[in-house]
Length: 208
Length: 305
Image (cartoon, rainbow over all chains, first blue to last red; front, side, top):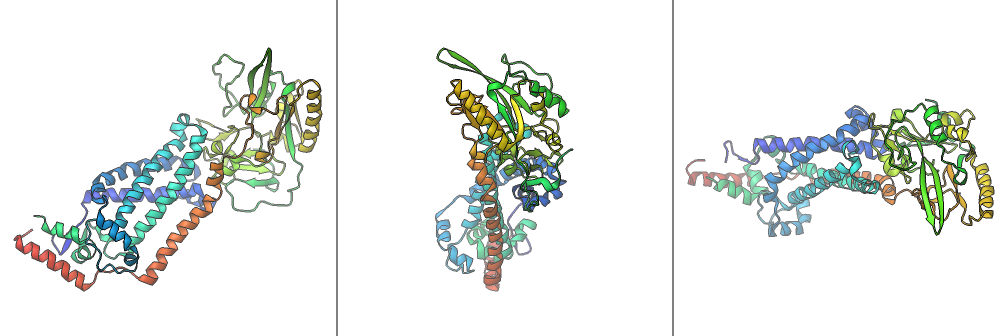
């Protein structure tokens, strides 16, 4: 428990880790989309042209992968699925309608957040592996052309999946008021903790 | 670089703009390589290097006549030698490999850089190097494994069908140099007629499966072969029997692009509509009070935290 009527939710290190991941994911989405659809090729200008975009994209991917590994090991235990999550998912319609009364008390993460976590974990792993196959500068000789074709399809599909999950993640932070400060300031209000993550709140309060 | 005018462009990679239509009825050109007349002298390779001002580094022999052993960023054409044994017979099959100038070019379909690959109205597929970003997608698009990316400048290179010569009424350098006239150049219609004569001749000499290689899977090609064994193109150093753009590339560069953008746009619109219909999820004063009670009670019972 911290002072000033707020509850500590993320350490400074966790927040820096998160924002490195966030910035690299956004840069990857912009540079990747630039090469995915002709209508978005203009985005290569943000990175200094087509050649620079092609050259820099995989390096940002390496940053994202390492940074996300940090998030993964920080948070994976808190994202293990439990029975309450199944109940929560069955009542997803109510959640979307802002009618959360009567749902089970939740730990640090609700089922939606857990799905975002596991979805991005799987997709980023697939993106990293397929990305290595497409990184001709260093790895051209190690795979066949058919394997590169498959990787291109997998890479694009996973990227679209990751962008969709990112939209859900960002929208949830806009929709559920009081959430964003967890990542900008590291703390949330007592009211927010009571409303959204009561079980976690009780645990935090109970800590010596 | 000498290229044809923009009026002469039929297709342009990664471009959503429609190309000009006024010259779309241009004469279709083709190179016809008569494998049965090739003696493997490599004059075409030398002429290609010379005309295009390319320098192939001296490499190593692999114990065969294949030299260099594969297409490279500088060697846009190579002779591929195959010893085909059947029964007591040995045939030395020599195929001049290089870009086939597909009518439906997989490289152009796969390329993400606007205008880095163009197809002219006469059928020639050309790489416009200044627009090339070196991603290697053309390699994945090509059904014939032709484009090569330079390790020096990360640009893709391949046969231009001597577009600079063709655009001023000259035959490609390889065709000009061939001492046995195994390489013809002209309109595609004329080349097909000529190939038919050659096929008839080959059949009369006992090559009953002789035929023209102009694979329909890629819409036909603007480089065609007369083969003695047209029923088995793969005999000729792995020439694809039925080349077509990989379905994976077709999916990636086809339906996936609009569906993906639509899905992303839908997610954004859904979020916006949700916000304006359901409104934000806010913490009520009652929640705040209960939160304070919980925190306050625990804090007091433990003295201080």
